[in-house]
Length: 452
Image (cartoon, rainbow, N blue to C red; front, top):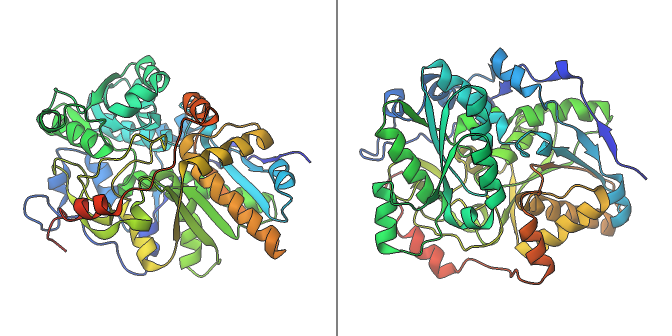
């Protein structure tokens, strides 16, 4: 049995992004000002983002048009293929029908350019010449660096120190696109210096790197901040994935019973899942939707649904999300980009509404699943995507045990070509499972802001 590819023609790239806020049975809780604790307005976000993105952040329109220059760039790799994984099905001897949407075909090797290109475009339109951001595993940093190169903008990236050291080739890709990369925490910002004064050997976190990037943006008039996940407008841009998948399932004469994606900040999960979740909330389909996170950073499965800061230095607005606390420092595991202390407010809201499920996977199980997938399908997944693969295999084996044939789709959010050291370490027995200690979570959650 061979893998089957369902590929849409180029003219079927979506013309608009899908905004799930239009279909929510109750709206997502408002974003709060970090100083006053009151709901923020557009002017409060203007130092960080261009007004077009701020308006998308709060929009209730069901569809928002994709600008022609953004679609022109998308054409370099979109529509991305939907594959039927028949060889994996045969390996598992399962009656389940397994599909995967492959985002690793983008130039940067992941789903992240879907929003990086859009954000660079809107900033360029507003006259901004430089963007600053953070990155964990490096997929986002390399994607924004590429987008800035396309639109003739400067780019500065604060890279979580553990990833900076673990992933030199991803760092090299960022630099190849013309961006500068700084390991975080760094001595370049007040936020970084404060962390280093207390923890000189800090391996960093996305929360710390966000603090550094936001500080730079807020103190330089020619610079705006760009975020690769979590925020509403970021998740909005990723919905090209799920919209294409809906059309591709029509080509396959099938529809998923289960939608699965890994979840760190929520962008690739939202990209595939939100269009399906919208149909579910409108009563047009009934699909299980599962977010899969690492057991070492279990925001959805062990975090608290509460208002929290998006960064460690408390420079960002407060959002209601599933959080482990803004002081959370993740272990130096190979979960890649899935190290953020919180989950996207929209994803958290859907879990609170009972529209989606969440589960956690240990890293040894994730890498075992990734290798099993690679040996069946030939694609080496990014470590983040391996968490979704592990859940897909579990669901397929459940179908086998129960004797049921269900359709399963997952987002293969990127390839693992820059992550081979992690695979080598796994096969050499150097990786270990890690459960984040309950007492550490309790301590971090004790510092939640007293609002909401």
